[in-house]
Length: 126
Image 1 (cartoon, rainbow, N blue to C red):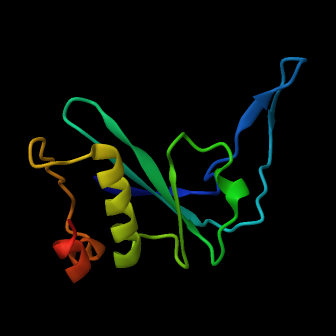
Image 2 (tube, rainbow, N blue to C red; image 1 turned 30 degrees about the vertical axis):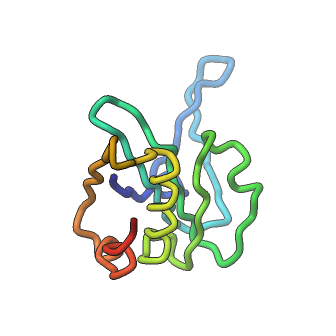
């Protein structure tokens, strides 16, 4: 399991070839100024994926933002767009739902040392 930040604003200006074969520079504009979306991914050693979670920097959820997301994506929001202890518990529930660990079929979850992974509720979970 790991999180990664993805910038919502491209950091380079793309070049486009016009129908007449000339290269032109296109300007991409965005209402946002370099905001980061966090994506949480988890995969087994055999290549089985848990559907991703994405954390948007918002105060209120807008379902349209996840309209074309991959099936099973867990939509999350936070003020900063980053993982926190509360969202990590939500993700753990998502993980258990898809990984289906049991006494007969245990699952080992490996995570980094991000502070959100060490809250008391996270340690006591499951």
